[in-house]
Length: 247
Image (cartoon, rainbow, N blue to C red; front, top):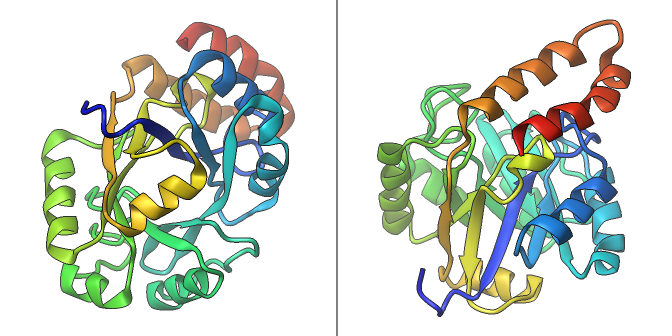
């Protein structure tokens, strides 16, 4: 890591406002105690509720939180950063990106080239060619996603971003406290404003470590519990036990 990149952000975290296991305060407290992150983004699926709460209280934990969400467009998932109003799901990618930009936000293609994810450059749900995605005005590609990225895909994403002239980012895609910060975006500076400038100026670097086997096992466990009759009630109460195991 070059000293030039002094800031560290995890801009792809999920809370219990969508399919994550931890509350907003639990996430912020974990980040404060267990990571060296400067900036975070709670990017829940198709909702801003948790992210706006995080934005408003992050200062209590010595952090900055970007208002964000992960939008399920018809062509794949898009991270909407610096948005104040929810972007509806199931719109075409071009309309999704336009609505993000209308708010002065930044649109990042989540897990950009993972072949079997809901990604803009993947095989589902509706693949977009790189030149088509470039024309839509996306601002960056998530080149490193700690939950799924394998080395060849990371380099494909980096090459695609270079050709498109957009930023590259990294994120944890964390659904549990123990995985927060395993994927990060490095940037010059320390603040959310510095991060936004770095994304627009293509001065960011993805970094991190991929999930361990125990993290994948926990993800499956959480999904199974969430779909039982006990649902979110059981998931919320059993989550602390899981967190003790995976840390």
